[in-house]
Image 1 (cartoon, rainbow, N blue to C red):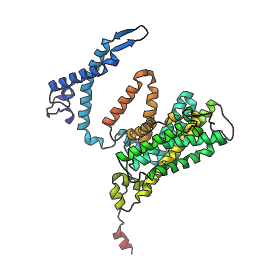
Image 2: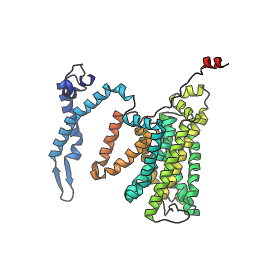
Image 3: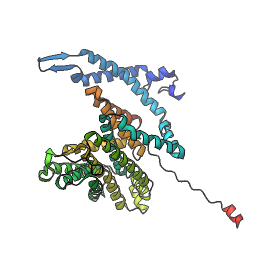
Image 4: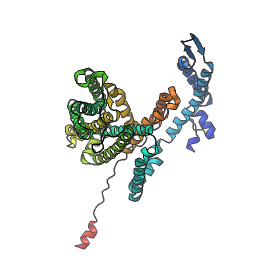
Length: 432
């Protein structure tokens, strides 16, 4: 059994493999674990041991915390090395579909199972705001918004391979478009929603032209700068955007002209977002399997070869930026309508980082992966609020674990396979 052998190839069973994983023997493993424990105690000493009480002007020395950290790291390092060694041993198996991916593929390939799954999902989505409270519904609206944003960025990063760190700028354009039009001309949500999409696309093209010749790190820096420029303009152009104070009193969407209360409006917004996410999934899926989708994949894999094959690089890149930004513009309109207040602080680089994390952790180029990534990255921090100050620490640990053990993302993209079946020329000749 390969999983019971240590680095020297000696078969010691599971306990031996666990205790010596990644090391030449148990003494080395013990030494590594002791060093790791000492380092962690040293690094966490100021925050885990010392507590200054400024009211009573005293210092509490919490020595037991130091013991807990040392013991946890000492034994945790054995588990960590075992997981890494196990990952190396099963490296070939990770290229294959895991159980969840295999189940999804089976459902997608069977029409009857697909219909049943869609019906179950539709019932669950429709019943969600009736079963859960207003807080849960609000969280789910945020999650749906990030699914939409993630799928939009997935076009640019996951399919076309263009690293965009300023994606939040398109989100801000949509949100401010609705806020300003509603504030000055009392234009409603439904009129601005398509306009937000158009403005997002136009802004995407404006960004796309200067970066046509850039790729990799240089493209990332320029897009990062673009995102910051938009935020600084919003912050400093006070006469139009009201600066850091932001715009408040933005109208929520009406139902056939009827204004709704807070609870009904939240439920209504939830269904709007659910509909928009379905529309996004449908559109992105169609784009992915279209001619332009295959051109994006070719551009991602090898830009020079893509150009040599006769693909118009300029048009392909601009379409990726424009179509990716379209969904961000629409999501921005929905965000402004949901919160009824926006300011530049809502569109910082942190938002771009979260949306990019949704795509990378979920699985670049994978629609199912982006949905899974958004659910984990948006819902997990909310449900970890019970852990108070350790919430973001746990959240970061989960992200590190996913990146170490699933570098291709939670659900990797599945390429569509086209099979060539030659015509039966022999039978055709006999028929003649």
